[in-house]
Image 1 (cartoon, helix red, strand yellow):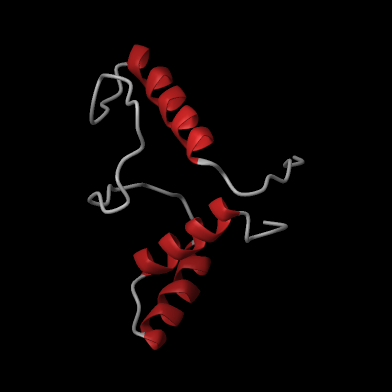
Image 2: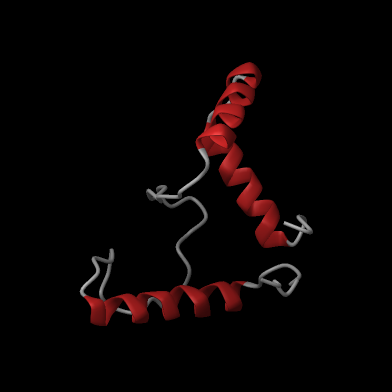
Length: 93
């Protein structure tokens, strides 16, 4: 699969995607934190939400080992990586 490279995501793009995903979840009865479509993004200091990802166990073993050696949490590493990705700082991922 070929992925189109994109630069940094704007707040307008993030809000549009956020709204679209909520709209898609509504007819399928999925639980969403709110049933209305938001008009703004959540604030930067909003509480974290849980997300579930399927990752290879070997990859997680290496990530957890490095996090432990650096005195960090896996959550902080994932958050940092996702922020970099959304800014367009990560290429060829």
